[in-house]
Amino acid sequence: MAHAINYTAAYAKTPLLTRMAEGFANWLDAYAENHPRMRGVRALQAMSDSELAARNIKREDIVQHVFRSHFS
Image (cartoon, rainbow, N blue to C red; front, side, top):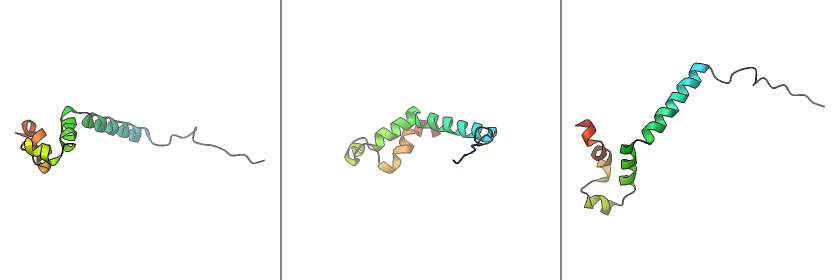
């Protein structure tokens, strides 16, 4: 009969500060992805080129269009 010893319960897999930094980075990423402006970017990117042309927006200018008031 073979016996296996598992040390993962005794030792943390990653240091505390690393886990805190990863948690903060994950939160920041989720916040940015759920921001209303990013939802606007995704909505415009989902449109066809003809729909964008009807709004006088070029596909390469979508981000600048959505964030125009923020960077003016």
